[in-house]
Length: 141
Length: 162
Image (tube, helix red, strand yellow):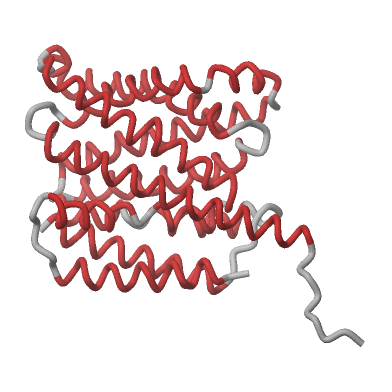
């Protein structure tokens, strides 16, 4: 359990540090180039992780799932990361990072509207907190 | 003497429009990540292991963006070396973050892990205020807003993982 929390803290820190590097890197190149390079670096890394965790699982991917994985790749990595980098380049890390951080709220709202999941008190409280926070960030000079 | 308000300086207008542009792009990114997460959870999850799904999604995403960014890639080939270095480091950070996420999910319940992931904008805000002072100004209001957003996202993530 403690190891899991430690890995989660490492992941959280890495994502935060990554945003700083994006801001510095995009001073000299376009967001699309930056997105491509960062994704290219990630491919061998994620392959290594997949091989280490369970190499047999790589060969067991059903053909019918591949179009969905293309869609996930398009949404998460091509579009999501490109928009993420473009937002950091335009508004800076201090504004863009919290805005991008509201993805769990969107995901929960989509799940409620389209997948019939129940509207919990956590979602309501979280939404109020996020909207208030965004208001403060965007009204800051 | 005229009573009309002075128009804002052009520099400030440009900065404001960049902030609006960045906000809309950020909301687009959050929406895109959210839809990707929902698709992944409802279609891919349970059929393919998460680390395998990430590898294939990353591979397909890279192939698609290589087509769209080919023209810009040629133009950016002369970008400063420091930009290439920082973006490479950003890619490594993102990938090691994903790796950390998988190992975290393997070793602890989602209900504990998900809210921790949601705290990453706070790390970015703190690091910005320390290391990017010459590029960005982090105000108390922005820090308070960031805290509220992070707390809200952590609450939503916690609720979703119950």
